[in-house]
Image 1 (cartoon, rainbow, N blue to C red):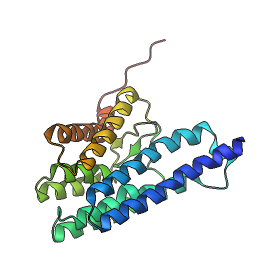
Image 2: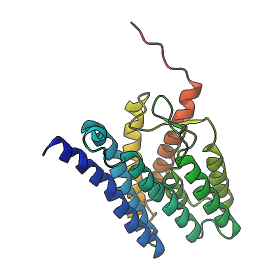
Image 3: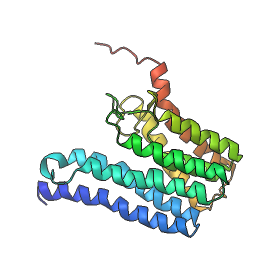
Image 4: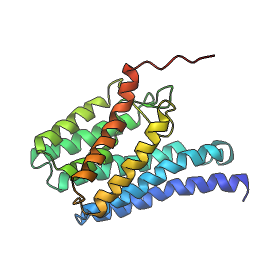
Length: 233
């Protein structure tokens, strides 16, 4: 394959996320929550590999006719925001007015965040909570805490989108990547396991899912508190 063909094929891989988001949405409409999350895991994997591939095959140089960043953001909004928000609303985990509040703050706040030109930091982390509501939703489905706890988590994270708190990108944030990347792999594995077993995997898997989620949510904030080690010459 030529360099242009390889670069364009990366866009095709990214675009496949739209298909997986539709399959996830179809499962959600039928209240097949486990299947919904399994398709979201597939989309999450695609989202994890297309970035490194795009940089490896220089898509901006060899396939500039398609805006890979815009393409990625469209799919991310579907898989990270829209579908998880729908699931929280329709599943009954956030009943009554709490469900309405959740879908409003999630969808409205996230679309503004995704359009914010300041969302990336100099170290390729995110400034503010990056709208990863798929992570939040799967933990709520697995642990099923009291709805007040779930609502509080949604409200706090929605507000965190508009703060200067840092949240890591497991692949692109260089600091602690030797920890963050394996944790991201582990999170994906435990999410798939929990969904595959219809959220009956038990406390060990649920605990691992909660711990890996807490690391991915808190590592960037910890980096803001803990200064990096000075480089030795």
